[in-house]
Length: 178
Image 1 (spheres, one colour):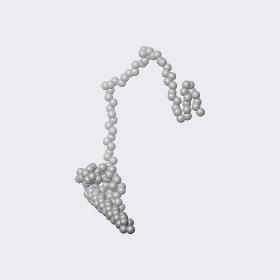
Image 2: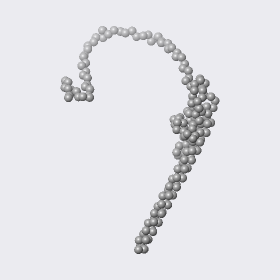
Image 3: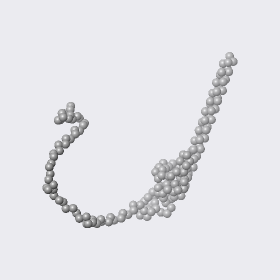
Image 4: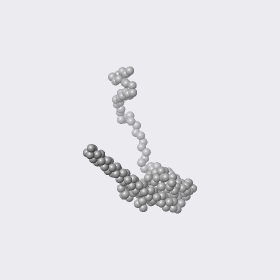
């Protein structure tokens, strides 16, 4: 049920506009107080913040993180897109491959202690590169297998079509012979 307020009607769910009942005020500039402004020559000395210590330390020699592996793979050109062009390996891709690695060939991740004494997930660089090359070989094998299956399927469909055509010719010959 609408409620009538002044010239406007307020409905449920709608906010009413506020009225601007501005009051005109005459003011005299002589009544305004002058406020002293701080001297611009004064400088505020900033307190130097203590330098933060790094959160992550250096990894042992030969170990890298997934981001480090992505950089090395890009430098070596070990990743190709579907068209066969060498492309950049993004760190997200490496993390995805680590997470979704097969149980038969898991990613060689290890827990190592960095220079600050923190445990970190890392792996030897050459183990990561070797795993990536095995992954590329598996992908190439799947591609060849898929192409062979597609070719076999096309050959079966062609043979079936030829068989049906022969069956149709024999049927028409039998009808003509009668």
